[in-house]
Image (cartoon, rainbow, N blue to C red; front, side, top):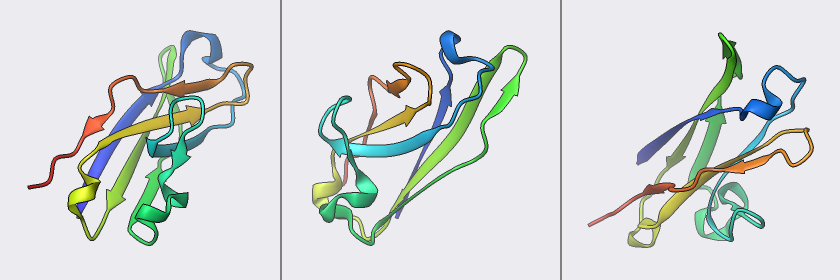
Length: 104
């Protein structure tokens, strides 16, 4: 089992706006058409993602999310990316680098 954690921060244009956040982790697709790991048949029954409430401190709003993968396989050695979507115009954001998992 492995846990991957992520902290995300709202961009300046959505700070303090009423915002709905939808999150997902993906390895397939791109930032425009990601395949949610929770719906990816290669990960059926092996992944769980969770997020805490978004909180604001000072002038910044942020959240913390995690991804748990169980029953690890060699094919799980890929780059995992995180994406969150808000209800604001153009409000879809994907991390640039992701997390590389290497299993030996």
